[in-house]
Amino acid sequence: MSFLARATPASSSKISLRRSFAATVRDVPLRPTTRPPTAIVMMNMGGPSTIPEVHGFLSRLFHDHDLIPLPMQRILAPIIASRRTPSIEEQYTAIGGGSPILRWTRIQGEGMCQLLDELNPETAPHKSYVAFRYAEPLTETCLEEMKADGVTRAVAFSQYPQYSCSTTGSSLNELHKVTRSKGGWGGSGEVQWSVLDRWPTQEGLVDAVATNVQAALNKYPEDKRSDVVLLFSAHSLPIEIVNRGDPYTAEVAATVHAVMKKLNFSNPWRLTWQSQVGPKAWQGPQTVDAIGGYAKLGKKDICLVPIAFTSDHIETLFELDIEVAHQAKNLGVNLSRAESLNDSPIFVRALADLVSGHLKDFDAGKIGPTSTQLSLRCPKCTNPKCGRTKEWLAAGGVGPTVSA
Ligand code: FES
Image (tube, rainbow, N blue to C red; front, side, top):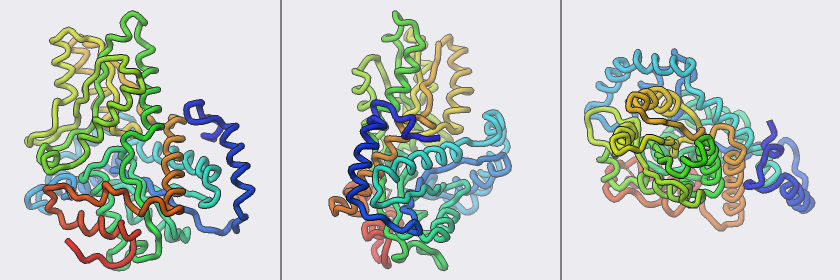
């Protein structure tokens, strides 16, 4: 599929892109076709593509101290993973037998690289790689593919637009650990790394979400449309992580506000939180509780908007579309949902624009390997891995790390 051919006016026209490409390409010396690709490493939590992968996925997830800090983690994690496997297998069965996140990530990555080859001929060819935290392809697999391709330049590109130490931070800690482990590759100068760690208000992202929200609103009768409550739903965090100073909550709110601004604040809205598990206190209100509250207040037309996921996975397809939808129906709520970004051409163009600007600014010396914001640890961070990873990334993924 050509994302150039599908580019929309909002993501600049095909003609102007080709013109600027033609203008640029004359100035760029031809490179040998054997040049290794510039790697764009798409990092995300991932999901089991098949039912037999569910247990391994859960086991890795519950072993991740950056995501779920448990006492006696090595003992408790396998017990919890085994206990939860049957019910989570049922959920993946209900959405078709596995998570679609790998398929969507590959489609997005390939479309992005098609555009990048034209936008940035000086760093072409570009190739997307996938590094999932809890499912294949894991970071180890990704690095093996990069090594086989002879990669020497890579962008670690978080697919979480809003940064949390428990998501993007965990993926970056894993990248540092695996590249620097005994026999590891890619962490001692073989690769020049830079990081795209957050992009909560990137113009194309905001445009893509707003377009999907408008499409959902257009399905309501015109006289009811402006009264529909937009309920932006993001994965919640344990409140202890929020109170540690994690930036996620504020960055999700920034995305929501930017989308509403793009929509000219056409509808009333709230930001709510989903996927809470366990007995601890989490960031609220929960999405399902908010729907119950609005039902009592007589607000029966509600449109859900996933705001922290860049494609469909279990939290949209099962939790929102089956569980929450069922409860909304029982409450007499007319619930709809904006499409996830998936293969949105506006979104794919946004990814390409983001990486294109990053590569150009990096090569021009305007930015370093990491954002200024990534250099700052949470005020109550006690995780020594965070300090080591940030120092390693700030040096472009080179050299030994010494501080805690
Ligand atoms: Fe946020 Fe360590 S927990 S930097």
